[in-house]
Image (tube, rainbow, N blue to C red):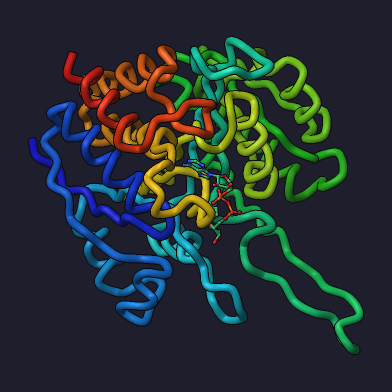
Amino acid sequence: MSKRVALIRGDGIGPEIAAATVRAVDATGADIEWAEAQAGAGAFVSLGELVPESTLELIEACDCALKGPLMTPVGKGYRSPNVALRQHFDLYANVRPARSVEGVKTRFDGVNLVVIRENTEGLYSGVEHWIPPNRSAAEAVAVVTRFGSERICRFAFEHARREGFDKVTVFHKANILKMTSGLFLEVAREVAADYSEIELDDLIIDNACMQMVTRPEQFQVIVTTNLFGDIVSDLAAGLIGGLGMTGSANLGASNGMFEAVHGTAPDIAGKGIANPTALMFSACMMLSYLGFDAESRRLRAGLLSVLAAGESVTGDLGGTASTRDFTDAVVAAVAE
Ligand code: NAI
């Protein structure tokens, strides 16, 4: 059945990697109708808003969104369009797989983990203020609810079950943050009772970071609160070759937004040398979400084979290929 995807090409290298990814997805034969939407600096210039109402309406009407990186204008009063989109659609689960890729040199082999970050609460709930007089102090409030903790922990266990993982590890700081982190851990233990085939483990966040950079192969599904998740998901990306290799999904009850985790790379924008791998991996997740499982596997296999061969990779991976050369190779591999 045909699916409709809102395509936000984004800023900087966004249009280049988005065009490459659309070609690669179309090469899988997935029946997708692309619907163009605008957000970010480009939308601000042409429509006067970072996230125009028309974009929200279009995403609402589509099955999901694929998004290139967006630039937030520097200055007071500009809210990140990425955060605005996640909050508007209540995309509470940020999912970032980190799997070792053959042909991409790193210090580790055999990493196969996924970080599932709570995307709406914690220290990023937006409650932050100055203390008078004269801004002598500042406070930020970490909001952790039973509702928010339960839905993300359940999401993590469901993900583990669906993807064939048999361990979920909670990263927390319940020894110090006894109520906020404590509640998250307590709820994780309650949820785990419904998944007897999956082991629940937990680690204090500082030890967890040390374990990730020494023995990352011990982790499968990691679930954690917003701030810890933000940090450890980048750490996880570093284990497998960096942000340029990492796709991500932001998922809610009824919508999904798939994006590369790197930024707009203004230093190389328009030069035709950007690496579209991260957005292509995000597109693999999108295809699975839409029910195009075979097409997702085909795109992933094509991408992995081009990366493993190493002949048509872009400069950031040590090659000399342009975005177009790399994409041609992926499209050819997908067609095989
Ligand atoms: P960045 O990720 O854009 O760039 C960091 C470095 O990595 C640069 O040298 C860049 O050339 C390189 N790089 C990034 N992606 C690449 C790719 N696909 N292929 C080859 N090289 C790549 O981070 P930076 O410079 O901190 O941010 C630039 C802009 O991006 C800022 O306006 C920021 O707000 C925005 N941004 C947007 C994000 C999003 O929309 N999800 C996420 C992060 C940053």
